[in-house]
Image (cartoon, rainbow, N blue to C red; front, side, top):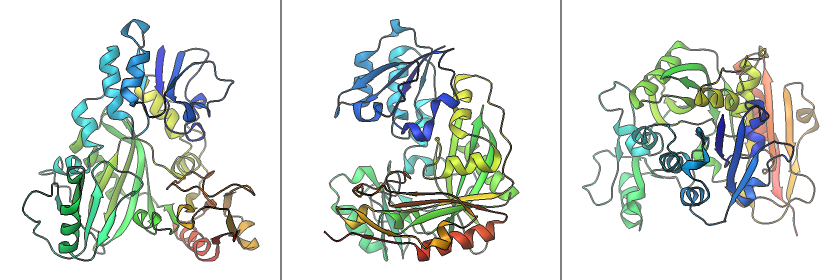
Length: 392
């Protein structure tokens, strides 16, 4: 099969070689030069680079032709799926429906599509030139197509949020959303031909929106709950998601009500892929590739029999310089730690919001026999690991 891969997600996260036989298939990678540099030189594949600042779709269309004979286009990044639709049209290659792609990218459209489905979701308000919303209290202002909680703001009162919304120059790219009290979960799995498969649900430690403010973020896997699976399956059906990875975030309120937050048709970030792989033996990117290309899915490996989780400590809020990291010895050597990642000595703090373990001051991957034990350990790490900026 001749395959064009739009390479945006860092290779260490994707590990395409685990899901694609590069000797059997004719593979071309295309992407921005900085990203293309992380492709292993050992991969048998053609490589095409885009100019930095060049529009993704326009750049790919400029360098490809229907006469190239591509049979499939893979785009496994949240930030490329809409552009990949244009590329597929240019190349005459089948793929996901544009309306579905917009539903899993735009936070207004995804909630609007849930109306009448029976799935609970926050009240929302899509445009600043309409009359004010009808709820009161805490209100969230967020980009319609954002990720990693970048740009999300929480206001104690609707009036303050409404004022901020009205003052935005690009207000049509934002939305207001009712604040929901409850724990936040993420559900990660696979969808094939509209059917939900292999779901694992985890509960966040801290909230993703607080990571941008400099607080650590983590999650730990929960025991199987039929309510969670049914909820995720209902979301898949309501939004018409057909194939690939599912990353769904939802609230669970004090009275155990499940409330939709947002969804993406791609694998989760941070430690999601490795935690899912260790727990159930399924490497999400490899299985997604097989599903999208119509190839047999890989045989799952043996699961660990343990519950897995991760904890990431940000550094973007500390300013320029190096991290002063202090990890208590008993935590670093604890049997529940699967891997502890720290920045090498001399490496500067990343100034951008990132969940990548090789770009943050500290990243813990851990596991335990029970969700409760894992949550307690990760909470202990959250309290006792200290990160500051080294004085200059």
